Amino acid sequence: MRDLIDRLLDARGPSGFETRAAAVWREEADAFADETWGDVHGNSFAAINPGGSPRVMMAGHIDEIGLMVNHIDEQGYLWVRNVGGWDAQVLVGQRVEILSASGLVPGVVGRRAVHLIRGDDSEKAVKLKDLWIDIGAASAEEAREKVSIGDVGVIQSQSLELTEDLLAARSIDDRVGAVVVLEALRRAARKGCSAHAVAAATVQEEIGYMAAGGARTGSYGLDPDVGIVVDVTHATDHPNVDKKEHGDIRLGGGPVLARGAAINPVVFDRLANAAREAGFEPQIQAIPAMTGTDADAIRMARAGVATGLVSIPNRYMHSPNQLVSLRDLDQAAEVIANFLVGLSDGDSFLPA
Ligand SMILES: [Zn+2]
Image (cartoon, rainbow, N blue to C red):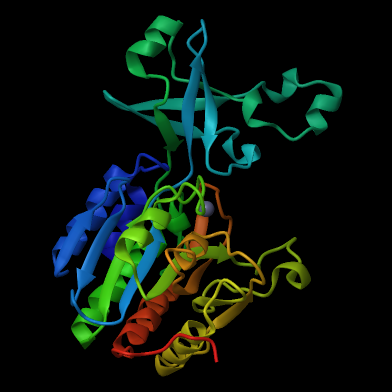
């Protein structure tokens, strides 16, 4: 699993431009799955036991947030739009890589130096429209030789091991989910399961999990009985976050199971029992309405899908240094594999 994590975290793939990351995922899936395929939006699928029952879709989104070139000015500076939700403060001072037709184009995020920011402006939070990207071009013409309007970019970064267990990287949200669903499939195949289990690396979650994301059409096409979504959630074990408001979620405390209206109670109970079988108590997160993940799309597919959400605790979401525990990933894969192994033809997911 570690090798796949490293390769996937380093792949660059903002929403709508996921093919580099998807190729890594599909290659890994080809090594053991009974079937692998892709769809027109770029979703990737890997299945075991085609024809088995029930049919389970496990989804982790493979896109990441990024930037899109919107305008090239006369001096050759690039002005960008956000692909997904950025805190513009995070971008200040970063290096970026633009994925252009001719390859990776390096750039730096430009902003007035502290000496040039006077008075009230120094108190204000920076906005994306205040920032530009400098690729070293002397003119619009020179810049256009390297990049085109609509090219996307990501922050240049490499994953960093803080300890044997803790890994920091730019694309943790949600490449780790894509890893966990594939690893769960691999373990279920090894343990033996009768369900038709399908792992999916979904696209475009960061720009609209309900309306635009690949999970919506992916789940329509697959028509599953059960959906299991693996995404990241905010760890609240760091300074300046209120547990009364955001709950108590610990990095390294194991995978997190969501409870609430979007979550099927039978799936929740079976996931919780699968965790106990694996020897630990899951963390639980209260989500009364929508989850803000692919789970919201999958549960609404066709006539409705019994859906659960397994979350990986993540510190510093949507920053170049998101932080996860490898042990949490391992346990999440184990819980979902046990869940799959425990399924039988005819299982009911009706709320009792
Ligand atoms: Zn996200």
